[in-house]
Length: 616
Ligand code: M6R
Image 1 (tube, rainbow, N blue to C red):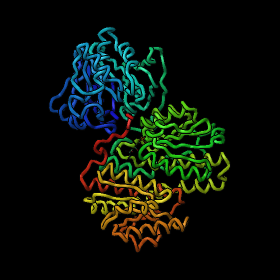
Image 2: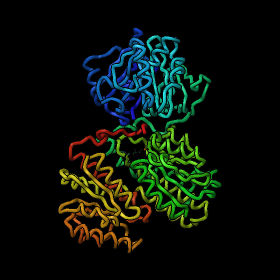
Image 3: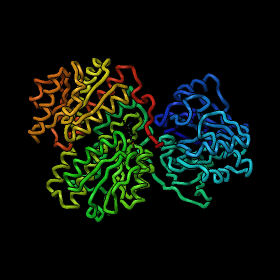
Image 4: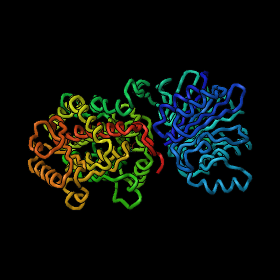
């Protein structure tokens, strides 16, 4: 939530900041703003409610002097609505200092009351302006931005990344982080700061991940890092593995369209280097075998789509490792008294690696003695750094707010993990692992087949259904989390009421929702694997059909049993049951995108949402 960027170097800063904000806009798009120290040594600031395009238009119509040091912010509103006044940056110290913030300052009310009592006036309703005035006040007292930050950060409770520039220190951007992300981009005679590497990947792929409770000051030629007490500290270096082109739309109508088309590649890249001649070997998991032998329980924790990936993963992990698995929404996990100990492995899943609820669950688990492993798509992110181990998904940058290619990559990574642990614990034989490995390797081509064969059909269907007000999704077994994923995508993209149910649960209540014409997607499991499960789902279809539902079936090629009861049939290639979700979710991603497009909605930036949810 909220994207921040900082720049210092020889370039004009405005184009760099605006390009960075464009890449970070997925983090929030309620307002955007920039501040630069201009060549006359004065702070210039412009901020506007609305998407970045509004700010750009304003800057084009009324250009602002430029300079070589600046900060930029794209906001997801928490405290105060999406107005010009509440947009960042916030000015302080007689408009000589500009500050931006990502996170929530939980004790802002008390701090604000103290500042008001001292005579400070506030121009916004944000918690962030409190930090601006506090840093401004300390700057007046000390004349040094780094010291001013040091004197303020320990007074702030909650989560924050702060960046500031002061006109009396041109050529310096100072930042601090606690529980919110901050990375440094290292250039030649220039340096960058960003919420993530997308902010600067166009200029450099050499990066440093700023640690928890660190203060950083960048100048064109140096990066200084200290802890909050001022002691020298180090940030973790890493190379960004993708280039700027990967985060561009590249001719697609939307990032989401591009990312759905990249689902085959996301799976292929997540497998790459981890299967050799049928042998599964995940280098990141090497050295953890004693742990995998020792555990007696796994808890998967995540939010949203990542949690649905976890629910699919549960089936694979339990089947192949015989270790019991629970899946917990991260925001629920630490607010009860979960039973965990050193024999519990917490597997967190997060595309961004910054989801605050998931991060807090991981921290809680570690503090209570459990071991932690993260499945993450973003290098240098906080959650993997706070975990004992990480398996990266290699889906590439996911920009659209709705998670798609990361989802199939997360399931793939969970399957690799499950097979690895199964081999270590002796619950999967070498021959079985090789067979599953072959199946995994076949998936990218099968996803491509779904895209080639069904995309046009599904888009047509979505177009016909543009006026639909409610859609239901049914699945059993691994199809159940996919039903919920299909419903989530439709809610967040097309603003349509949608629910995913376990098909067996239908007769316990939800069937009352069925009335003539009600569209229902049904995920039909393969009859080749379980005739019983298949027949139960076919019965469920008949039950809803008898009550007038319009039935859209997702079934494997050749399954003729569904034909008499389906209004539409979407086909997926044959796959082993545990791998089916990676194929059956693809039509649902296409459908949600198609319906949102048919309604004329912005599929990349749906209302009220942000990609990276860095507040609890
Ligand atoms: O970055 P994460 O994977 O931790 O994000 C978790 C959820 O916020 C995310 O999956 C969200 O539900 C998506 N918007 C769904 O498309």
